[in-house]
Image (tube, rainbow, N blue to C red):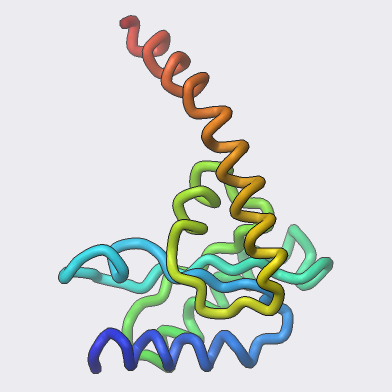
Length: 131
């Protein structure tokens, strides 16, 4: 199956999940000729599922998509993901966007926070390495 067919199947599957406000394709599947899985980041609507259930949700969705597509799919929930992960994932290709304004605002807020924090992170790393 070619890449665009996989992307379309993935989009259709994710579109049926009403709890998904946003789904973004990212990682090696987008970046190069060689990939071993498909990386997808999702933003879930408020309270769906609860923060404590999000890991299980991502795992169950990953397994279901793997069975449907025949290729491993790594799903991560963006709602409470670390800033660096959110930054890199949101640079990917949106698959499901139920609210364009939300996507634009989430990207702007995430990128601003990440770029504000980046110089501090580099300084901490230099200090930790004794440079």
